[in-house]
Image: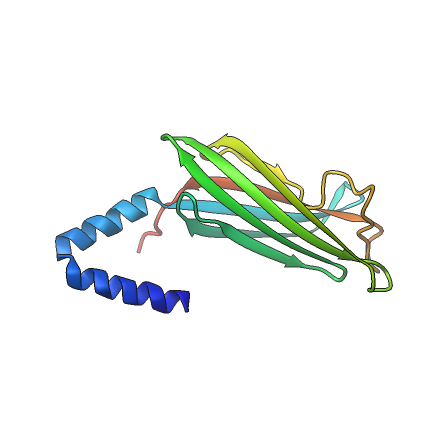
Length: 163
């Protein structure tokens, strides 16, 4: 539905703007676009990486990028919103929600987290949606004794791929 809306908006813009105006608007948008690069890792007992993935999303200042991680007894939803401040400065806002179920599957612990931090473009930041220590939440499964989730986030200016 969002893509259909974007296409309709683009067509409406094309009809009301001249070709030069549309080209300028698209150039300005691409110059202001940001790439949010996220490296997600699961570490066992705080040491060994047992799973990782990398994802990159394009956004603009003030628009959130959401990722969701589903495990056997944990669900993590995190939104990263960059707010551009000046040429190289950002305010990066991280909002996390976690649901961790007990061994029986009946008891579910729900937590939220919110962190905002000033960063510069290209500066990596690590976010722990479950917290840095797992003293209050027992996140385990059949394969690992205990694990934690680390999300490394880096916001850089968007670079369109060369065609």
